[in-house]
Length: 227
Image 1 (cartoon, rainbow, N blue to C red):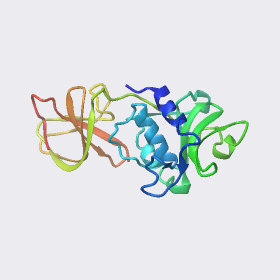
Image 2 (cartoon, rainbow, N blue to C red):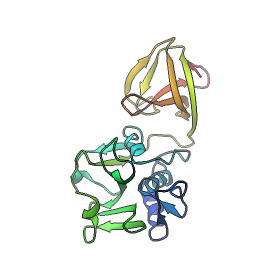
Image 3 (cartoon, rainbow, N blue to C red):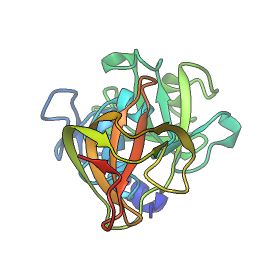
Image 4 (cartoon, helix red, strand yellow):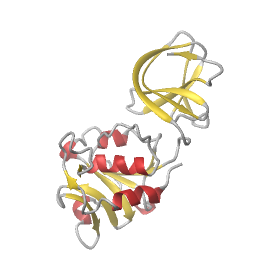
């Protein structure tokens, strides 16, 4: 299960010790991060996303909504450990976006070019240079959620699955997650991930909406989707 303080402790340990770079592979650490790779590694350290996760961008973080992140729609609701993304979804790559972690409503932890690395910004110094401190289409807030059981594993794998029995499409790899659609026998599912959670095997893909979806394929005894 996820732990906010472990996530934050990882990030605080990098303050003043890690430089800033958007170049690949430097941004993947350990000597340098950019804003989004820093947040990805913090989420991994806190147990909110798998250790095998792609270290992506702000756009990757946007797509975690409903799976690993819950959107918060008011700045007044911000809590310690919440994540901000500054930038318009679909246009936030590179200099078009910025992200970091709230330590408090008036204090953020982030990797940034201005301070040449991981630093803390507060309302007493330059916080307003990074955030408007109000939710809008170009400044959004998210809260990490613990959606996977301990011991899960995700494998990046491209494939085409055949549905043998009617199966539900869910927003998270959990039978407790909401049902969004149904695949019927004979239909095909193109997937890019395979994982295990709650005793089930799952395949996952990015839907046309841009959001990640999950389909259970079997429980170790029976198989209802063949991959």
